[in-house]
Length: 165
Image (cartoon, rainbow, N blue to C red; front, side, top):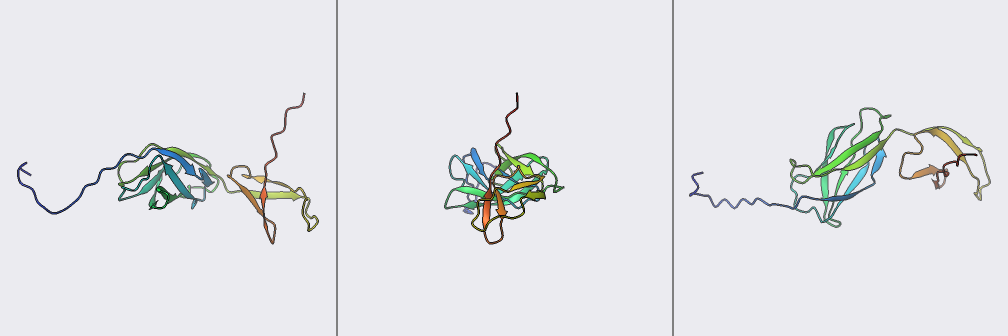
């Protein structure tokens, strides 16, 4: 207080290198939220004391985060957007002390998918039937999986149609 006297309370203030985010895994999730996002940095983010993720517009939400000592990454869950149909990108930032947020990476929100049709409606048990699925918000996720009763099937998007001459 006077520049001469001090106390030997043993309190420690730790400094850390500001993290440089290299990637998010996954970098997309439903607007309903709850996607577990892994923030991957240039070096381990082990020196934090109050980990949080800040998702910018359209949601403008802060969620608690945790440090994964095994990988050196930070984990957090995406927040729900105001509307299940909301879509778009949010800048995702991380703080290690609950105050200073560091350079963002984009996290993409997609609306709730809605199935409208599929054709054909049956096929042989051995598989091999190409099923066309119609609906909205089907092409926005990282991976599409169809529950086919006793097993899950990975769906593939067809390549974009080439323009006719």
